[in-house]
Image (cartoon, rainbow, N blue to C red):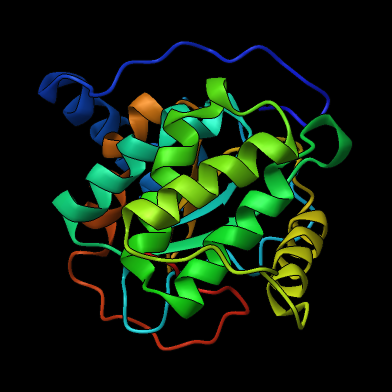
Length: 237
């Protein structure tokens, strides 16, 4: 979703095999550079200010970097596509929360709850919570609705709702740090999805082309060793 509010473009879950191969050939053939700073569809790269974090985690040659807002319909559409791709290609995800402020009144608290579950229960429970929040956006119109939804979710997983989700402010600070990082990058929309390698990156503007972007990145790095480096991002699966 655009930070200033733009209608979500419809997209399909998968490309045909032929379309994926054609997209790979197109990008690989660009001036002999397989992966640099490009996008799918072509020529739609956002005007980022700082792309220094556009790298895969240490030891990985290809990964997905994503900034998401849990109240964003386009993020809800992208979530299952991204997570199927993670399993199919066995690549890591570096996820950042980028709640869009007053226009989405409960998204930041949802991110805080997800981080509470990540830290206090399990990463799988946290990821499934995000999945179910995205799938249930139409039922959640206020912070109170989110609290009731979260209580039911925790109960269904044998957990009690804590009196305070973030008594020390740790999880709120983590979400705020992610938002500050997005501001540094120069984000203008959610989701912002980047397929990253140590040689360059591909911004996925149309999530139906995610598989083609990953295929391109894998082909470009097939004979390259993983390069160790450090990133300020937190890897979430």
